View (cartoon, rainbow, N blue to C red):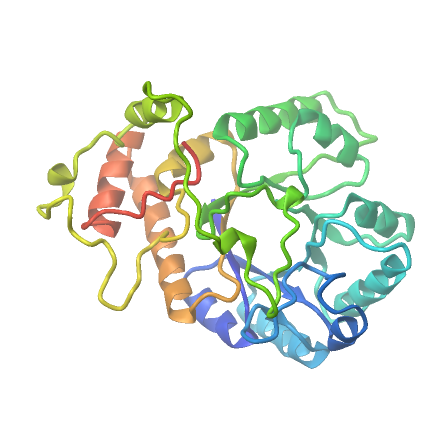
Amino acid sequence: MKITAGLGSIDDYPRYVRAGADELFCGYVPFSWSEKYGTVLPLNRREVLNYNVQIGSFSELEILANMVQKYQKPVHLAFNSLYYRPEQYEEITQIIQQCRSIGFDSYILADPALLVYLRKEKIDCEVHLSGDLGTVNSAMTEVFAKEYPKRIIFQRKNTISEMRAVIRHITAQKEAARKEWTYPTEFEAFALNELCQFSGAFCNSLHCDEMGYLCRVPYCKKPMSLSESKLEKQEKNRPGENISISEWDSASELTNPVSEDGYLCGATGCGLCTLKQLSDAGITHLKLVGRGNYTDFMERDIRNLRRTLEILEDSSTEEEYIRAMKAELFPNGCSHMCYAR
């Protein structure tokens, strides 16, 4: 499985590549777009100017293109808004064509109408269906197969069994040799950071400088009944998850897992325990979210995820993998902000 890391600034690209990222993704919002539409009609739902979340000028994009040529690690551009006004599709097409002219040919799209519009205009770029697209199931793959996307990015709320079912369905359709359709060949799942209580396709929060994000509002979840919840039962049945802290660390359960400099791998969302299951399900790429995150922490996240994949390769069973991974990466405990159960 390859690591796909979020990029918020062109200055971070060499560091993330050296840390072990196989590819990166970032947003590109020209200032002319922000000036014209503001934050209420976003290009990629990250209309932030106060800190590095995306590329804001074409000259920066040109510098990034030169870096990609040097390091040979691709960068995908995200156009993640759920929908656009009719007159904006032509503008977006012009932006994409401009980006393609300097070497960027892969795009993460959340709006189905934009994908259809691009194909209608004979824009033969590589398309990744965004994790904010909404429903991801076998029937959905039939709808989009005619628009030949290369990759499906599963949303945060997809279970591993759902991912496995979709990938098996696509594999079966390929074997049936339906030549008129082109099915995705790559599958991406969230692995680290930014676990959100909302489904991206149904989130109406504005991610901008003027307002706080709804996903950062404190919340809690608990079982609806007093009896043992289904979630608790699943937790007990996860291989390696019933290992007590005393088995893989001499510290007590009250030890603070956060390091002195404030770092904890997967502090806001973690799927490292499920990498064996994701690999077996057919996942080819792991998304490491982090546009706008502290650069040093992102670099450590990438190194930790790379090390985790090495541990996975050396482990013969899932339980062995989880034991070894937790012993090395989480000697004082983890965040318990689990992506999948």
